[in-house]
Length: 502
Ligand code: AMP
Ligand code: MG
Image (cartoon, rainbow, N blue to C red; front, side):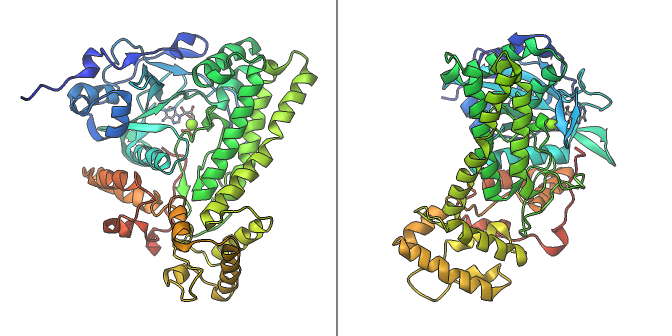
């Protein structure tokens, strides 16, 4: 017997609303309606995430869902809100930013009992839009949608993406484009900049309620601690250090590491002009707008540290009454970052090389390999993936291993040392290659792949979004039918420029 689909969204008996952020009220959040878009079209829905949220496939296919995800219809029982924050943009303090084009449309409990916030991006102007239009264009929405889920599948903490809706509504950027809305999902979207906003306005009394909310909802293990702010901030610093190591390990460049784009949960947040490195260049700058290279690949870990220093500055009033005492506590927390980062990074490189034991000279072996890749402009992702084919037992090398390498003489010397290092820990070739293939992805969201999906979608074809989405859910699997997606970009597509324009 065919039951009619159970439509959960319109009636909304479930998922259960769990408003906690909106309950903070002014001055943290303002109730702001979304602005409807004409003729919304659901380009993609993340069925797995929808299921985790308690939205079943039939519900996600109904017109009410599309309308809700377009911002054309409110989530039953919830008034959408936007929040105020500031931020250090490219090192300069900007006192007032905020959700200029984003609306929180629901706070829900998932069937597993976890609290999740749903936020639309590109859903119209808010009091924080300044002079901008509150919209997001299709190309940047596709990039955010695909990359959030690609990062999640890589095992990197990130905001998730539930849906991607397009509309013919024109949006003016450098040229005339069209609008789209992504629905992001996270336990919290509070940024470093939320705390900075109140700190620099000297509204220090506003810091504790926000921190208490973040801790109660997301760090319950610290809620009863007498040092709960220090405990939480220590955890943010640790998560940020680990996040940066995770980015470096897959060659991910964020592009706009402003403090307003940094999550107090240690999530990758705000996908703009990001990029995965193709030909390895440690100074790679993925954001065309970043002329000085502040956010270049090799600068990212340092900037992560600096951003933590801004968060700790902004939360000084929470740490102790006497400023000197607060600075002492904050400095101690901040000073943990370098070692935490280095530990996480060294562990990640070791795993990428398939090294099981930790030895003092591993860093030299890693750095020599990276240097060989850099001088030869070798493809970062492919070079690491190929290494899993290395065999210690026989001297005949898999040809793929050399494919990406320019300086073969140096490489052969390095391989001899690598072989010796592996043999010294009785490395088993087959077992090692299995371990390596779950840390060195075969597929990442290269710019030219995202661009192909964008171009097709701009011509009305969402098929490539679906293909990439599905492919990138299993980045470590071979998927031979999609081998072409693991190739280096063709020469003419190597320098696609992405900028802050979105
Ligand atoms: P982003 O560069 O996307 O991280 O945005 C920086 C700030 O500008 C945030 O406060 C955004 O909400 C705001 N913003 C960016 N683009 C727009 C837009 N089209 N309309 C309104 N606000 C925007
Ligand atoms: Mg932002």
